[in-house]
Length: 86
Image: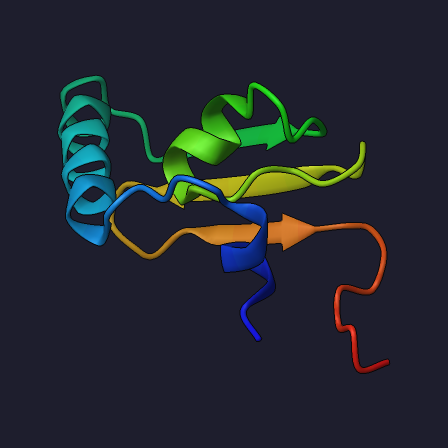
């Protein structure tokens, strides 16, 4: 079971996410920015975390994204165990 897919009612396509990331990386290069760091705790009005990952934060627990200009992003979650089998 994909827990993230269960929590996202309208998903952003992979193609759209790639387009966003490329556009942001071009702006980061123009401004000489190496990393963006963003954090959110609300699943409603998900902010930059939702915009970059299409995964909302959960129940007030922080979700942090480190978005480098020249590598893959890292997403860190703090919160309850999300595995329903546990």
